[in-house]
Image (cartoon, rainbow, N blue to C red; front, side, top):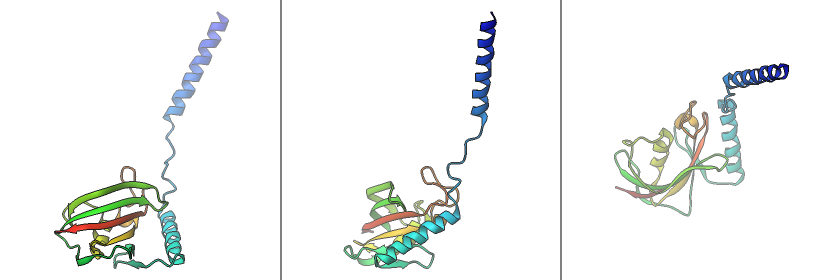
Length: 164
């Protein structure tokens, strides 16, 4: 009887510990995703581009891009209202791909895309391709979105297949 009592007390104690641990809040997995971290990542990326002597440019709004000199397009650049077909790969600055498409068609400035995409693609014309570095302020900001952590700069390689 004494042994059964001890087992019951031990079981009750272990149950209490498990319940207490389950009530404990999980540590925020994105706590380290700060604006300072983002600034450091962008600075490192820009330094790498500079040391590789790649043709870096930027828009007036702070979207950095590297035009692909092997995919020079023709005709007018993308404008609001155009129906644009693109191929793209979206990745984090470390190269991990989070999205891609071999053929996506959308109406520029009417369909809901991130601000940095909409601003950056306006430097491209049909047949051209570029790599864009989009700061989080022009992407998903300080809150992130689904698989995109907060304060995360994004890279997009975008090729304009058609403009109508």
